[in-house]
Length: 298
Image 1 (cartoon, rainbow, N blue to C red):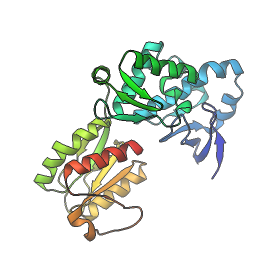
Image 2: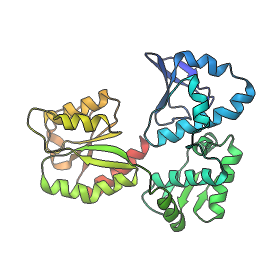
Image 3: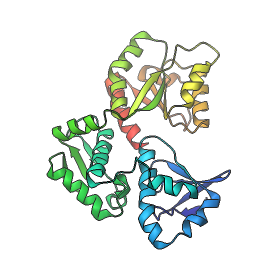
Image 4: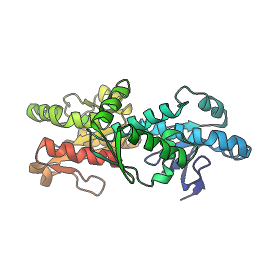
């Protein structure tokens, strides 16, 4: 696979060529995703003066990270540099950067005192659009001194006060759409709505349940909703070809798919491959915890 240096975070990562764009996969700008850069814009970005790079590239890296953390994929060209640097989305003060980090912790946990680990912390300062690690650590310490977080190395926990403040600041944030395909089983649907969906919302997703499937086809509404989703959860407890078809369509749209199945039906799956390895669950509460850990790893 081709590798290339990301201009904005300086990491060498795999690059996929997609038409007029290059996809930079897994760099510090989008560690769990990718961003796209017009192929003919790489050299113009690289040719900018050191001073311009020093002032603007941390902002671009922070912008990509901010968007990717909210489930959006960024496609860049050289003409986007000025609009991004002038975007109202970019925090203008240390206080605004601290608020951004606080809401990041809020998305990563389901309540106060739950651990959030910032892996490779020295490479994560774009979480706050910071130009360097020193400012990032200053922001973390500011939150700690205000007793909004507790910190032990790279492990962060929101305090009760921090959780409340983060929840208030995140109140207007839009959750990422998540599509759920579940059997036409009233009790199971009720259990998921009561036990599983709140955990999905705590991970930053708004779950939308597919309508009752019609044998032999996937409805237009299902296709429309799925194409706009950032995650598909496909339960195989009552397996059907329509579920596999819908999941295949999601994968074709670059929508991540998480498979689940009730333990009673796990041995009777229509398809058992390395690509279809569902989480096996007995109780909805257990499944909620499994999904929470899986989604955070995506």
